[in-house]
Image (cartoon, rainbow, N blue to C red):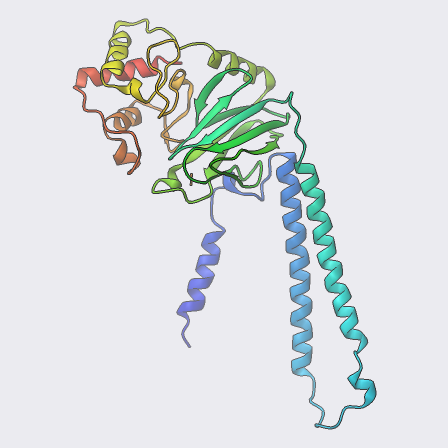
Amino acid sequence: MNWRAPAALLLSGLLASCGPADLSTLAPAGPLATEIANLGWLMTGLGTLVFIAVMGFLALALLRKRSPVRELTTDETEQPAVLWIGAALTVLVLAVVFAASLGVMRQLSGWEPERLTIEVTGKQWWWEVRYPQFGFTTANEIHIPVGERVQFELKSDNVIHSFWVPRLYGKMDLVPGTTTTFWLEASEPGTYQGVCAEFCGTQHAKMLFLVIAEAREDFDRWEAAQRRPAAEPVESLADRGQEVFLQADCDFCHTVRGTAASGHLGPDLTHFASRETLASAIVPNNRGHLAGWIVDPHGIKPGVLMPGTQLESGELQALLAYLESLE
Ligand code: CUA
């Protein structure tokens, strides 16, 4: 017997269940994600029961002794009751699943204009994050207050992406030409991993983001800091770095509020140093990765729109000092 195919199937099944708990829909961290997970368990449970019942009847039919061929009597040609019972059970199971789905969908709807609203625009391959009520823009790291319903407006100006934070909500598409809206809530403070869940080009797999849920006062402090224009460089190296930033044409694509840099192709860098990660949450935001990213972004993320920047060592050190000063 060829054992390879079943072994491969089993192995792929086992591997498919591997993965960080942070990306598991079975570890919900918010009320809506819990509803969705419960619906999933209900469907899995009912599906399992139906499967066992069908297999049981199949086994029964196979094991039953065959009666010799003969003419059917009138009684037997009429629809036997068991058929009707089977149909009724099917309808019942589908009705339960349908009603439960409608219940969850009803909870997911609800739009209130006064709630905190966050606009997320899918880029190739990063996320622009705007807080319209506060008037600032950031990238790839979305701060929200814990225990509050937060509304999202999703857009794209290129191809279709999909916004997915498995522990907080289901997948939501970002479709060019339209706005997708929904709300979510995190019930526990923490950093939740998000991914793009729709193939959108070469770096789709490296289009990650973070949702950082924090206490209301921490969120207020963060939001107040983000609203401010960029810090003026205080030390001379950072000051020199600001010149390098403008000379190397970084300002063509990046905005640093409070300076002449006002490009919109790449992420807003006004408070770049306050972010934990780089390049759409794929590497930590530290000096080594930042230097590598500036000099050779394609080494980290092939196909990325940002070109590499050739700088002398002194210029690079100055630029790093400047970017690190953008708290
Ligand atoms: Cu964006 Cu996949």
